[in-house]
Structure formats: structure tokens, C-alpha cells
Length: 186
Image 1 (cartoon, rainbow, N blue to C red):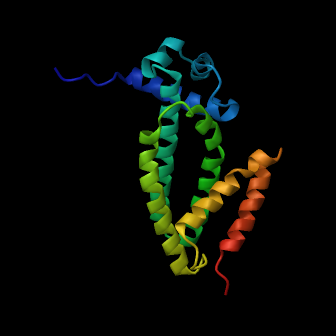
Image 2 (cartoon, one colour):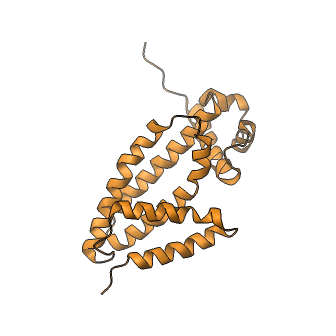
Image 3 (tube, rainbow, N blue to C red):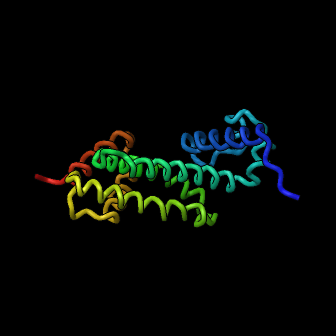
């Protein structure tokens, strides 16, 4: 017998739980209770556990969804008409996504998430490589910059908020300085 497709209301509830969990986790960390996620989603705790049998499963699902959306953004940027603008948008997004990653990493300390990360580990460097090459051909970025160097710079910039009370503003300023250093000189 073939498996039945999930009901529309079940799919809506799952989406609501994922969206609420992401908001709650970003705002308050992954240590918040599953009950708080259920309240934020406007569903009962049973609904949360029906879709995500453990909190670790919920955290992983939220993380996978974030990476999926980020991968889609990267693919759209690769197709952008203006490669020099697209690379800066992408690098900004890398720094933003990585900035919230420490909370996720802490939550995953006891969980194996290699499978969750595999698509991003394959897709994102390819997208970044394409964006970098196009931006370098256009003369927007120094020709000696590599993908590995860009990744290292974005990860370093993403850690800035941990160092300062006004972390987001400081990260934006540091990112502007890094971008200035990456620009090709006439």
C-alpha cells in the first residue's frame, strides 16, 4: 500500500512550527523549551512532537531549512546580471548566516549533523566560486583572492558580534572594511 500524502493542515502546521522555531531560536537561542516553540506557532505541544519527535530533530529541520533557503539565494545570485553587486550581497549573507551559526553549533554538539550540512558544503562553495570568478572578470574583486580566503574572511567577520555589545553594527562596519580590501584597484 502506498504511503498517503500528508494532509494540507498537517503541512501548514509543520511549516508554522518550523517558522516559529526559527524565530524563537534566533531570538532566544536553541535552549528554549519546545513548549515555547509550540506557543509561538499557535499549536499544541503534541503537534510539534508529531512532526519532530525530539528537540534535536526540530533544530536540525530548522537548520536544514535555513541552509536550503540560503542555497536558493546563492543560485539566484549566480544568475544575477550584475556580478559585482551579486558577490557583495552573497558575502553579506554569508556573514549574516554564519553569525547565527554558533548557537546552532552549540545545539548540535551532541548530534551528528553531517547529513544536514552536506548540501550546503557542496552547493555554496560552487556558487561562491562562480560569483567570485564573474566578479573578478568584471574587475570588481582583486584577481588574487580565492574562495577559501573569502570563506575565512566571512567566518571571521561573523564572529565580531560576539566581541561587542553592538555586534551587528560593528559587523557591518568590519564587513565594509573587508569589502574595501577585496576591491580591485585601478
